Length: 254
Picture: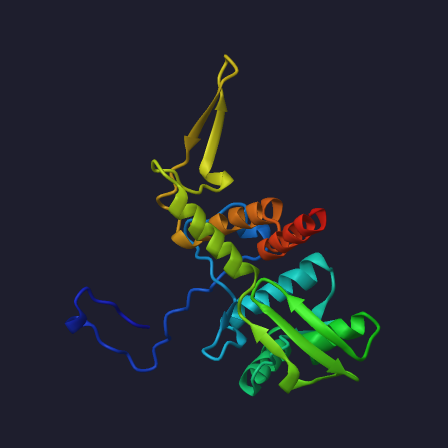
């Protein structure tokens, strides 16, 4: 047993005493947390980029729970009975990350076997090709990788951390700087609509002062993502190309 005192000077360590139980961290994934934000929780990115630009796992325990939730709860597969294929980024994890992934899969998820595969190689095989040029554009960046007979040509590959996430953050920055008169981006769950007997709809803002900023930032980014997908488009031709076409047409008319 161990005793506790109000003053640190009166406290003492008891040899052989059991340490206090650690508070178990509960991980929510999918829409369990995003639809009904919880005041006592924080939202964090599982992945992060190193100084050299490589995408690595920042929180292995959370990633482990996300995989468990996706495979067992949604796909209805028992992890202990099925081997697992892990598709790592085309830029390749370093040796320490690969060892860490192996440890968590075997010890945490208790899978019988795992196989680490490169993303570009798997994309090529999925298209029934062993030799191809794979262009991968996603949230965390883009990469261009030539695949020859199932192997990536490392020296001819290129990648960049600029992806959909950077575009969304830039769009959010533009919208925030251009909003005037105290207006701000508000996700749907921060706005309440009330219909009066006359048929008029009143809009009221929900008090979210006790909500962690990580939740608000995440939902603002989701709102901007929806706006980007629905409203933003790439021009078929650049402005210079359009001007050149107009000049050519004027020359033909002359």
